[in-house]
Image (cartoon, rainbow, N blue to C red; front, side):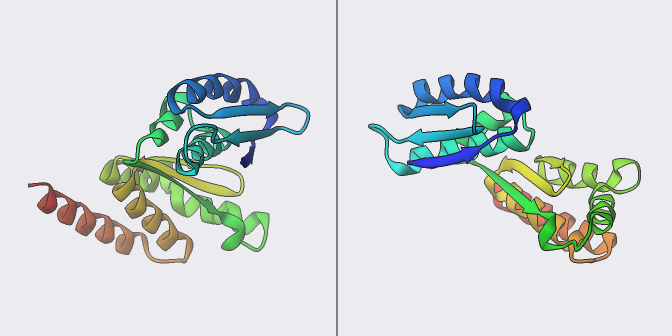
Length: 171
């Protein structure tokens, strides 16, 4: 059995997604509205399948759409949630770090998304990355580099090299 929680404003979406997951994955989902908790029971499915459902609900909880979150059913997709409390000591630090990841007029976030094809969400105390697993790993590394204080130019060079390596493997 697995548990995950979602904010109040995501409960209705979680209910819709629960129905889809039960049909597609053969799991049982119980939503406890009072505690904003979701219990996932594998049923006939194995625990790995139930764990996929957990990731779908985590994606919903941080703000991804139903369409994007359901991509996590596939083995080809991954979700990474980077906690800013691991990098920031105060709300001011978190704001500054989010600014580094977003960039002026959204430039840095847009570059990360364009190079990797992932969807990056910036929350109050987290940055989430959802996309194809290999590309999500690259985007996560780029975000972490920024959070660790690496120069934007260094991160852009990393993304460029990663894209070149990816394209050379795709041939």
